[in-house]
Amino acid sequence: MPDHQTIGFIGAGNMATALIKGLLASGVADSTGLVAADKDEKALRRIGRDFGVRTCSCNTQAVSDSSVVVLAVKPQHVRGVLEEIREEMIPRRLLISIAAGIPVKTIQNIVGSRIPVIRVMPNTPALVQQGVSALAAGESCTSDHMDVAKRIFGAVGETVEVKEDLMDAVTALSGSGPGYIFRIMECMAAAGVRVGLPEETAYRLVVQSFLGAAYLAKTSDDSLEELRRKVTSPGGTTAAGLAVFDEKGLEDIITGAVRAAWTRSRDLAKE
Image 1 (cartoon, helix red, strand yellow):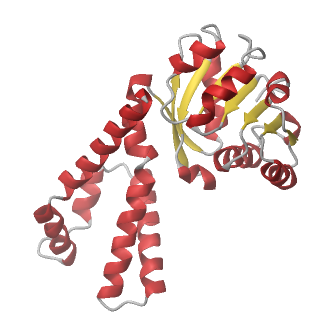
Image 2 (cartoon, helix red, strand yellow):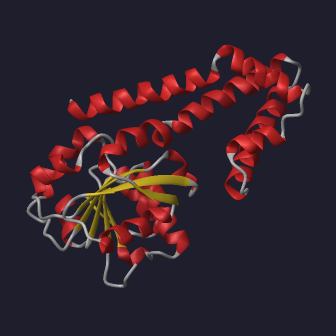
């Protein structure tokens, strides 16, 4: 980040903590260029102690000290916080929101249409700097604004830029995706126990299998389909297992889950 830019976090919860950790670890920012505000004094003490960043209980103070403001509060608190800080929001300040389901238009209706706003959907692996974040720019944003946001969220994983009307799809796929994967992992570990493995051994086998498969998919030039084919010998054990997936309609189950999450995301945006 340029030396003159300070990033202010409104909210000091898990995602703000992940971003601060990533920014410091990657060297994108140093502790003097970060400030966090929260009404929770305990959260402020923790984040100040762990990372050495400035903290304050006043949201407007954090905004006035920052050139980039990251809105990291729960969706139900967004309107109140925006009304509190809107007098401090000026066009030279970039506002980044990670509040799920809150459209850019809703934010700009409160802080003003001239304020550059970027909406971001990160996911929970950002907590270990292995997340993926989708970014959607508002009309007042420039490419420079997007570059700044990509550097911030690139500190906790990968970034993709999408149109805002695809954010519900992003939420359904990558936002909720870790939850789907954890559930599948639960089922696989439990199945391992049922065929005789000790619980801890089954857990370790499943976790490392997912980790290794994901890394192989990320680093290989092969498609996911081709990777599956390469590990599936005709008449072998993997083929037998995959046949059950096909028999039970796994693709329909996954598609149904993503569509249900997509529908719920769209409904939440209207509430």
